[in-house]
Amino acid sequence: MSGNVTTPNPPPSELGPVFDAFSAEHQEVLTRLSHELRAPLTSVTTFARLLLGSVLLEQEGRPPTLTLSERVKALEAIVSETERLRASIERLLEPPQSSS
Image (cartoon, rainbow, N blue to C red):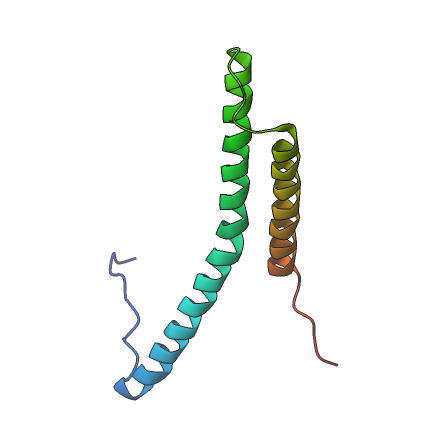
C-alpha cells in the first residue's frame, strides 16, 4: 500500500457560481442560527450577573442594587429567555418533515 493520498480535484470553473451561492446561503443560515442561540443566552447571562451582584452586596451588609420587584423581573426574563432558547434548539434538532 503506497503512502500517496489523493485529494479531490477542484470543481470545474463553470460550477464556481453554484458553490458561491451555496456558500453564501450556508453563511446566512449560520448567521441566523448564531443570533437565535446567542441572543437569549446573552440576556440570561446579563440578568444572572445583575442578580448575583445584588445578592453579593447584600451578603456584605450593603444595600442591594436591585429592588425585590426588579429581582423578580430579572428572574422572569431569565425564564422567558431560557424558554426561547429551548424552543430554538428544539426547532434546530427537529427531524425534517417529509412532504407527502
